[in-house]
Structure formats: C-alpha cells, structure tokens
Length: 255
Figure 1 (cartoon, helix red, strand yellow):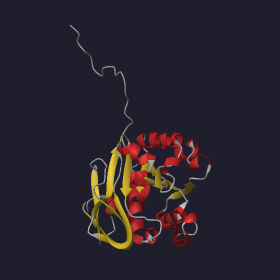
Figure 2 (tube, rainbow, N blue to C red):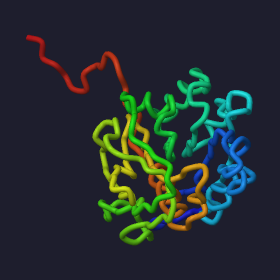
Figure 3 (cartoon, rainbow, N blue to C red):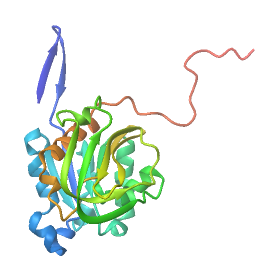
Figure 4 (cartoon, helix red, strand yellow):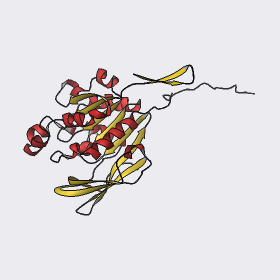
C-alpha cells in the first residue's frame, strides 16, 4: 500500500492492480509449434512479461472449474486479460454473464487476438466481430494513431513484428470509442488493431497481435502496450448509475 499525503490531513491510498490473466491453454497443448514457443502456456508467458510492472497477477484457464473465473476470483480482479481461440463455444454462458456484469460494474477488460470471437467480446460489442484472416508468417507494422492516449506511453511511433497472423477489414465491431492502433500487413491489408471501448463503468481494450504460433507475447513493446492498457482499464471511474424511478432532487410545483 502506498500513501500520498495531500496538504496536512488528507491522503490518498493506492494498491497494486489485481490482474487476472485468462487463457484457454488448449492450443499450447495440442499444436507443436505453439507448445515450443509457450511450453507452459501463454498465460504464464504473459504473467512473467508483466511481472515487472508491479501487478498482483493471478492466472486462470478454460479447464478449471468455472473456467477459473469464480465470483470470488472476479470480485478480486481489477482487470481481466482474455485470450481464447479453440473453445469459444464451450465457455459456459453462466461464466460469460458473470464476467459481463463485472465489466459493466467497472472491471477492466483486455481482449487479445482471437479473443475477438469470444462469447464475452461479442456480447459486449453487440455484433458478430467477424474479420478476414490469414496465417502466412508475414510482417506487421502497428502504427499509433492516437499518441495522446496513455496506452501508447513509452512505445514509440510504431511496433514492427516480423511474423504475425493477418487480420483484415472489415472488422464487424461498433465504431471504437477510441482508435489507438492501425495495423498494416505485408500482404497489403490494414486493420483496426487497437480499439478502446466504454461499457457503463467498464473500460475495454481490444489488441489484435498474439497468434499462438508466433512469439508475440515476448516482445517488450507488446508487453508495454498490454501493461499500459491494464493501468488504463483499472483507472478510477465515477459513481455507479442508478436506474428506474427517480424522485425529484428539487421541489416540483404541481399547481
């Protein structure tokens, strides 16, 4: 716990961000290329790469009871990272609803790569989240188009990846509240690669890189973007909205 004194009496307390990294952990056990790059799973690689940023990190995977996302885990999570691919349709609707409600109530969410097609992301977006794709070991440039955004801090003007899966437009999502990265691929396509959304009290960042057979999650710039996104998604929000009948806050003259 850190205390920052303001004036003589008042102070503010901050604590480490509680980060849960959720990964299916299926491809790494079934695809040899993925197992060679992420022998203990992408969640472990991400946890190690994000550890220097001071987060309190917990990991969870698809095969755990309730996919590791129990009410207790989510109630002690400030930001959730989500990576899924092979088992989107097998994720429990009950768990999806639980996570969805936590996001609406203020938990941050970082959706990586193929997580765009998860039940959770599609529910939050209200669209199909379909896109074009191609796996061809092609170069990608991730261009920052909103350098004022805190997610871009310390990254430079672009990120170069020697190999990444192509995702191409049209990406069937709502117009992002903030577009932060635009990706270009060697084959000629472009893509809205970094998009921020607000859903009630929750902040959501979708980040496109992270194919299971490429070492993207060892790239220091990629890890910096994800760490920045966690800090942004965990930032303070206002009071929870109240719905339904509302009594007047001042006198109403009914005559």
